[in-house]
Length: 391
Image 1 (cartoon, rainbow, N blue to C red):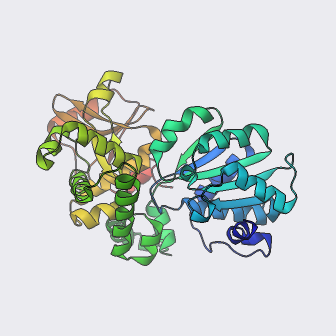
Image 2 (image 1 turned 60 degrees about the vertical axis):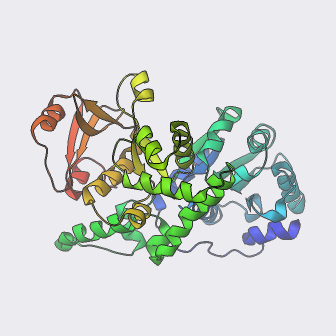
Image 3 (image 1 turned 90 degrees about the vertical axis):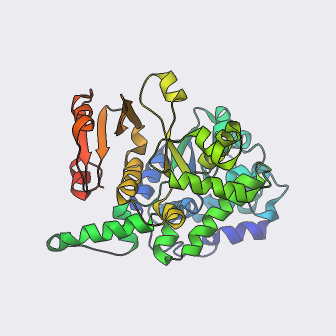
C-alpha cells in the first residue's frame, strides 16, 4: 500500500512541476479561496474537462506559494483497481501512518473519482467531523452527488468545471492579439466555435480523442452503470440530442423516432444530463411551469456537438456558448404567445442571442416590453464585452 501512495504523491520525495503551464488561473484562484473554509470541495463536470489537473495545480500552489509541507498533502485516484477493497478511511489511515501524522495535525486530502468508493459520502462526513482535514474530491457523475448530498449538507461546496471559454481557449492556443489587430478576433472566435473547450482537444486537435470521450461516457458511465445492453440505441439517442441543441426538447417526438416509450426517453435524458454531456434549460415561470414545461437542450461542449452534427448554424453554436457564460446565473428561457427569448437570469436580466443578426417584429416587441432590470441583445463579441460576459 505504501508504494502505491508514493506513486501518486511524487512530491513527498522530490518536488517537481506537476502539470506544466495551466492557463486556467481564474479557476485555481477560485479554489484557493476555498482553502479558507472547512467545506468539503467537490469538483464535478464532464469527463476529461480538467478536474484532475485543477487539483494537481492546487497542490502545486500549496507547496510553492502557501508554504504547506509536501507530506501534509495527499492525492489518490480512487478508481485504481489496486485500491479495491480499501475504504477511504483506511487509505487515509495508511497515509497518516506512513508519515507519522497525528489526527490533530491538519492535512490536505485530494480524492479523484470519489464516487467509485461505496458510501463515500459517509466517509467524507466522518473525515470532516473527526479529523483535521481539508478535503477536495472529484466526480464525473452529478446524479451520484445529488442522491448522496443530504449526508454532507452544510459541509460541502460543489463546483462544476466548465469547458474553456473563448479567452481561456486563446491562452491554451498561446494566441495573443494586439489592439491594432483586433479584427482577427472574429476569425479566432469562429475557430473556437468549431473546436470547443475540452482542454486536451484544444491542444491536440485529434477528433478521435473527442469521440473516445463520448464513447467512454456512453459505455462506462451510462450503459454499464444502468445495465443498458443496447449501446447503439444510446448513441442514436445522443445524436438526436445534438441535432436538437438550442431547441425545446420534445419527449414524445424522440420516443416516436426511436420507437421507445416516453418514460424511457425521460430516463435516458436524465442519464445523459447526469454525465454532463447535455445541459437542460427550463422555461421561465411559476414553479409548476418550470417543472412541467419542455426544456431547451444544450451540448456540454461545442467540439463534441460539431463532430456529431457538422459545423453548421453558427448562431446556434453561439447561443450554446452564451448559455455557459450565464449558467451560474440560473437562466431560463422565456416563452409567451408563441414567441421565445433565449435567456432570463435570476437577477432579472434578459438576453437574446442573434449572431450577426437582429430582432424583428413580435420578438422585438416582447424583448422591449418584458419586465426586466436589464436587457442585452448579443450579436457578437463586442456585445459580450458590453454585457459583462467577457473575462
